[in-house]
Length: 240
Image 1: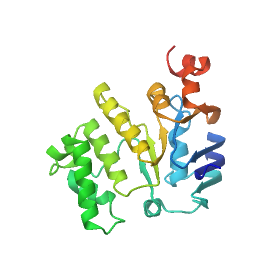
Image 2: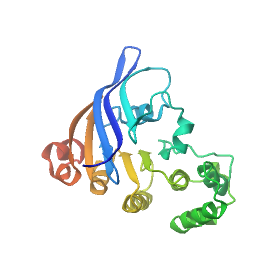
Image 3: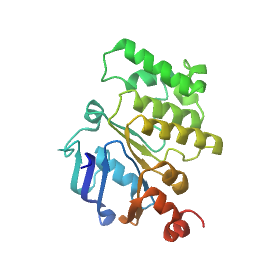
Image 4: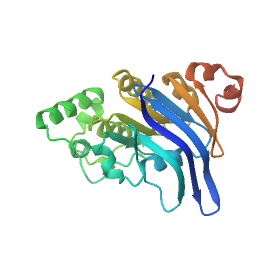
């Protein structure tokens, strides 16, 4: 039987009278890359923020379990200690810190100095542009460079579960290809990933399973390869 890393059941999120998420179920099993696709405003980012407890004041119902334990009441900064990391939409880098300092912040829960230094060198090897600019303030980087940094920083804590929110947003095609190459490689290393992405084709090509979200509801789920060939997905999300 597959081991659940993340299980969301009956999740509802309402801002006043506006229901952003209307009772969804989803799960991510150990070692899976699962993608959540859908149009703008479908409720995808709200779902990720509900999982991590980073929503503004609103009404949240349902259950979110990580490694078999409820996340209810967990502070977002405690999640990193529990090996749950998120790369938020908009990257969220520490703009007044250097690239190296950002990476070290990603490892703040660790005390293995040699291991941290080795991981920084590993990510500099994967993203040479970050190494070239290692002493540069993160706020001066391009959007693509900031996305590289945000992903590397999140992976510095050696997460069991990595949440990615719109990693390709606003990036050039070349940069999007690089980011997805890294996502696939991280998945091959055995890190469990939940990917929220508007580029449905790339997301489904990379993922094992997919969920389609529309107007706060999950309207379809299945094997990612099968979904690529589904005429409903093609018509709605792949422009075919």
